[in-house]
Image (cartoon, rainbow, N blue to C red; front, top):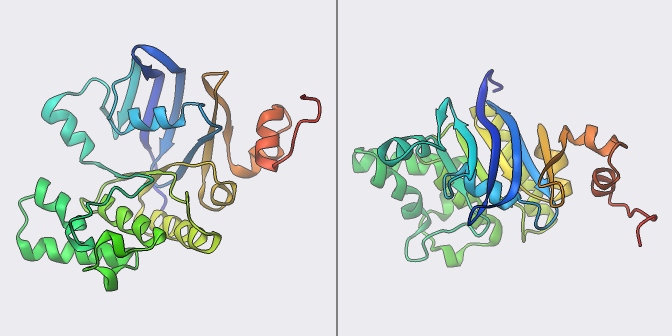
Length: 255
């Protein structure tokens, strides 16, 4: 279900820690309904960018605009209202171990809505069905496989019907078959429900499967060194680092 318009706009972003930028003067747009991938090598700033885009850290300068609302300058209730428009699934799943899968999905609904218990139950069941976990609703997180934990985290991220979902390394630690199943789920949700996905990953197989567009960060550049589709970047000879990354080759000129 492709849409028109911009879901996220990042403008002249300087982001880092203790006023020391890891990334500098970064700008890009994420369009509604697309799967947008942020990738790069270790230390390139992709996790830093992710944390700023979900409101965990304030920028040093610049703007992060979520659905026409400036997250960077928002505070208090206004910031909370913006953040309720997004969902986040962390790499570990971050499920509450003392709650069943069902209770984990229900938690945001109980916290942020005034819905009845029956409505909350219905919505939670629907989210679990969307990720294929309805038969596992009353298991504890410790009883789930790695792939199931990722699906449960995705269901919880969808609980409040966000327009945008951020995924942190969704395929990390999964076997190739489970990873491929999760990739299919992400693309299916994007196309059928029109959800915008922002995915941080370095898994080449997943990138080629799920991404509509990609930005690639690089540590020394402190920002974006390439942008485009997976096929475009795989064929791009203008930057040897990007070409080698996408084609899993080694620059023989480097010692």
